Length: 366
Ligand SMILES: [Zn+2]
Ligand SMILES: [Zn+2]
Image 1 (cartoon, rainbow, N blue to C red):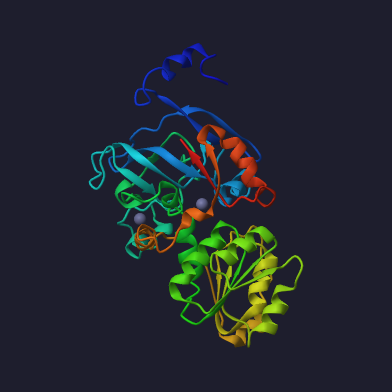
Image 2 (image 1 turned 90 degrees about the vertical axis):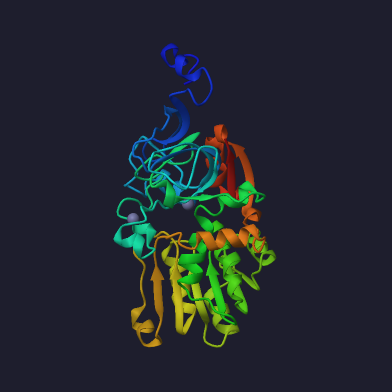
């Protein structure tokens, strides 16, 4: 419904954006239902809050999961989105690192900086934060967003770096790096396999190369994604729709791979990882699983395997920001589509048909 048709709302949509009391946002209305509509503009609620005017945001696989009703913590009426960059519109009296007009990267993880988990750099489990944006509180697929604990949850955007590259630092690069590469202990000379060539698998591919693995297998069902993976550093690609990926890797390697990174979140892809891991190897699960997997502990127990899993902490974001600023990696190459924020519904349709549309990351510009 256009605000121009509703007389009592017309008052709010006149004037500069700063004077308006409402804004447009992408609202989750229950499983299968989203709408881009007029919602309340966020306001400072606590002294440590900042209000950020969104410049660019994106859609995450997690958002599709929410739309499909996989994430019951997200209540109808919530504005979605947990990634983006923007400009500070207003800060609370307790915010000391940022001021109005600063260009910032929004972290998908909110961190108070003082709780027990934050002290251990496990920001994903912050007792007054963690993944709350577009989950427990309103998110970034809107004209404005409220960021709690702004000092610890925003990063100053460096001058001269592409805005769209910086959006990749909100979630996918730290997730691929921390939960895939770091947890998997990728080392120089390793043979590694990444199962799933979506944005997260690709982020693991880009960041794994910091540690110089000798061989990188990329496994997916989508030929287009495999082609891109090869261009971006995979030494070998396997289409698991046409070939038995586990069999091929076991035939080509001595005992399997040193590190298997799961970047899908399905029983079949986890199973590939446990079939190809060599003694002493690491299985690093990044995928969001909706159901249990069949853990072959009867085969794995004797093999000295480490299995890790988890939510991103974003504790490596400052390091990743330096590598992006220095041009060591170019995460903007993961961006395949551009839309205006007002076209967000269409963008969800394209992202929901990623294989057909050849979509990886989609940028929404406010
Ligand atoms: Zn995300
Ligand atoms: Zn905390």
